[in-house]
Image (cartoon, rainbow, N blue to C red; front, side, top):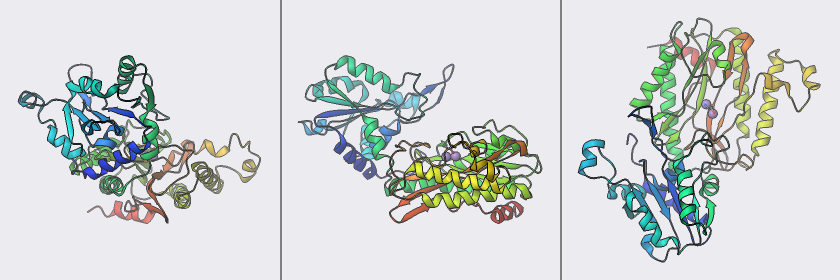
Length: 432
Ligand code: GLY
Ligand code: MN
Ligand code: MN
């Protein structure tokens, strides 16, 4: 692995918290994700299933975790199944986890080869009343039309054990994962620190006529050399009006003199993510109008993030952010106070210039799992990302930080990433 070893206590504690939420006399089965293939004989890469990782720390394909806390036999209570390795596998595929390495990473004593999964499960299945199985319950999931490893496990298990009760792993992990432990916060912080360095590199090299993808290359270079696994998502490097397309990521335009660039990027380190957005002028000096829009968005970020507090309801936070942006749109002359006073509240006018939400959970997923009906709590990590997009002026501005909610307020994990206009201009003009 590219990342430093994570203490196994994290995964042991996560399992302890997880099994406390399981119904009595049930077995949880968690599977890894599929390896994604390309057209021919190559693969596009592997991303571990985050629930499996959260409970085991195992970052390898073809892994199954079985938890049966009330099993009669003690050695049936936690079993990890991994892909068999041997000298032959080593020659062709390189190093795969041995049983003792998997045990050391996860803190699980009993590790078996995957080929024995069905046989081992059969020996304990009828002792239990039900199963917990994994499924993608993300509100914006993109797996709904494709069969995943989890879907196959559900089909297989229900066919083999039709009279058991069935329950959802995701219901438990969605409750637990939003509250980060100190170890998890440190991993997100590490990802954020890499992002900070990447951003500073970009400010140093940016100049008129550079291509957006050349700036993306700076992000990639710094990420890889710092031990990041991959971008948290396809980075958005959007100059001029490209910044008004929220999911722009072709990054193939030339950055023109006088334009402003919006860069939304994140680092995945040890499966934990950062997610930040900064805007900066191609030529190192904000124009008067860019400065006005930027100052408005920065004001919304500073004021809005003060509401990321334990006890605040996400809905109230979003409403407050919307009214902050609305007030700025009036100041910028984009909306008039009169038309806002008369607006249909079902169709608020600010949505023309600000059309997305401004806080999402951050962690093992960039848009991490968690309910948005639940009040914020200490230990949650959320982004704050107000924006104003004015296609007719070729200006799109979003600023995004990552915050840890604590019992006394919140901590900006991305504090070290330059955001004040003077700091950005100074760094861009002092390129040595
Ligand atoms: N880049 C995705 C987001 O900011 O939510
Ligand atoms: Mn982002
Ligand atoms: Mn975000």
